[in-house]
Each structure stands twice: as C-alpha cells, then as structure tokens.
Length: 477
Picture 1 (tube, helix red, strand yellow):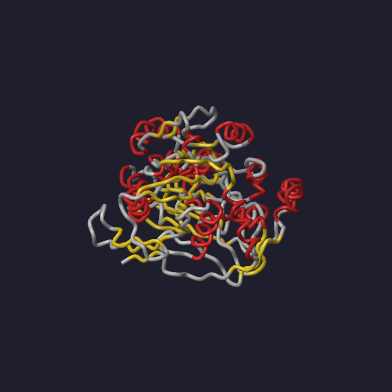
Picture 2: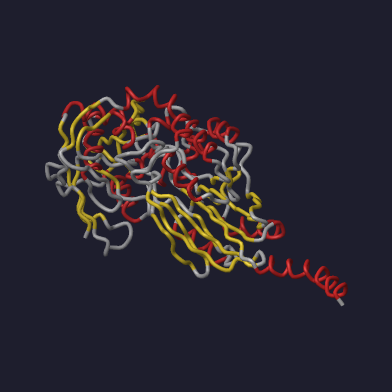
C-alpha cells in the first residue's frame, strides 16, 4: 500500500502543480509617458528625464510606453534635433514609442535618423511616410503574456505640422487602419494595447469601434488623466513636459485580463538617476551658457490661453507687430508652447515659448479675410489667435461666418471688409498650418527669414520688465 500511495502521489503531483500555476494570477506593471516635448531637465523642480527614470525604475515595470510628441519644446532637445531625447529614452529602456505630430518638426531626414537611433520600435498604424522604420505595431512578451501594441497618430497630423515637413506623408482613417490590422495582431497577442496621439473625438471613435482594446495610453491634448473610462476601455494620459509618469497595473488569470488600475505619479523633487544625467550632460554643457542668459524680468507669471486673451499671447503678438512694422499681427496659439514664470527671464525661457523654426512673415489681407481668419481660431480646436493692433468681439450665438461681431483698429476705426491691411504673422500659417487658408491668398507676401523666438528675445531685452496686463483686445460673448 505504501508503494501504491507513493505512486499516486507522484502521478498526481504534476497535475496539482499545473492546476496551482493556472490559478495563480499574473501581475503586470506598465509605466507610460506622453508629450515630453524635449523637457529633458527639471523646471522649477518638476519633470526631467533623469527624474522620470528614477520613478520608472522604482516600479520595476514590464513595459515602458510613450504616446508621442517626445520631440520639440526646449533648446536642449531641439538644438540637437532630438538626439538627447532618444538617448535618454534608450537608457530608460522604453518598450515602444508612437509618432506624434511634432515628431516631424525637425524634418524627415532628422526623423529617419532618430528612428535608426532608437533601440525601441516607433509606431503608427495609420501613417505612411517616406521615412523607413515606422512600424504599425509591436508584439512584446512579458511574464508569459503577449502584448500587441498598436500605435496611432491623429488624422490632423498634416495640418498640425509644418506643410514642408510632411511632404509625401499619407494619413489614413484610424478606425479603418485598426480594422485592417486587428486580425493579424489578435492572432499574435493575448491582450491589445493602443498607444495613441489622437484628438479626444478620435479616441472616442477608437474605443467605441474596438471594445476589445481594453487599454489606451494617450497623448496630444496635454491633459493628465489617471484614468477615465470609455465604455470598457481605460484611457490614461500623463499631461505634458514630463510632469507626471503614468502607472497601470494589470491582473491576468490564465492569460485573460481580469483587472486594471491606473494612477499618475507626479515628477516633483525627485532624485535623478545619474546614468541618465550623464548621458544628457555633454549636450547640456554645449547650450547652458546660451540658455541661461538673462534677458528680462517678469513681475508675475505670463500665461497663454486657447480660449481667450492672454498676457503671453498679447506679448508675442505685440513683439511681432513692432518687428514687422505693420498695422496688425496674428499668431496661432498652437505655436506658443510654454508660459513665462515670475522672476528672471532667460533666453532659454523665450525659446520654450516659441520653440519652432518658424520665421516672421509680412503680407496684406482684406478686412473680410482678416475676419475669416479670426473666426477660424474661434470655432476650431486649434485655439484662439493672439492679436495685436486690433480689438475683436466674438458672439458665439451668431451663425458660423458671422461670429466676429465687432472688429476695430486700436484707434477705434472699424475694419473695412474691402480694404487691405498690413499683417505680421509666421510661415507656418502661411503654408496652411493649423488649417489657416486665408494667409496664402494675401498679397505682398514677404518672408523676413527672422526666427520668431529672436523677435521675442529682442522685444523682451528692449523692455527688460514684463508685467502681465490684459487690455480686452479679445472679448467672447
């Protein structure tokens, strides 16, 4: 009997072990970022890639994902065309990244180089570009679970990027792109994640069309979400400039996802990882003197707004009008990327306000074209236009095309629809960026070749002291 009992024990022990293993849950940790925008160093104790690395490593994650726009925003990143950004992401060991609209800002040759340098796949399933190396998806295995990671980029990428930088780029419907891809990804994975750089409406369409995509790591609108639910899909975003890192905890039972929890971890007053600091140090040393040059003093924070007048928008537009020597100046708010904080204002601060390689343009528009341009900013998601030399009142109760209720020059003269007015703006909107179409129809168009940030720097240097004051040049009823 002893031998028979021992035989039964040996016989059933493997089966019991398999049963216990099948019942044990599998816990997976995903850490994620989006819209880093080249903020490689902390600002006022917030953000920084060395600091992000410390938070990520502390969590010992299975996957580290980015949802796009790691490019453009600081002199340190932009001076070297994104090379230090990719170098720090490599050191942190990102699992994958997604193409955002600002990945095209350095031009396609630079993007091609960054993709080659990245030691992780860079994804977009709905973009076809003359840049080799962009993958539609990646399959990553961790703890016996196969993750299918699909990247998606906003369908508006061509209007949000400088038209010269997206020549030959084709953009496809996000739902149709995923629909085509899903059978292939489904066969190769146990769970599907979308890392997306999309408008809110596009995100909602995606979640509605594909409820089996249970997790969306998002970006683009700079909103920190930790998390929200769209149906049975969890959506998580970290905001902008590395102010937060996202963490998602997933629980699997027999390779089936049974639970998800997400939260945001502020990147504030964190001790940076030295290996990432060392990678950035040579780049930092080359630009630190220029970035630290003090050009003025702000008596209070100068903010920008997409929905109305702002002190920073007024400052930028006034600087443009003075330099262009025109009656009016217009600046798309999407081109203003950072606030100016109370205290000393440096050259690096001014760069972060206007980080793009855009130049100052002068031209002439009719009053009717001017009104149409102003309303374009009011009714779309691109945000209000910053103005100088005019005062505008909008009435949103009026039908589209008639929402400019009043438009006056600063001396109180009404703007005449048929009369020509001299305008200062930038080459991005002239080329149709952000969907502006009237600028290209203007007359006497002249590209000064002067970078916008240099105009702002000169303006601040001439005044030295900046005090945020609103003068009601924009009123929305």
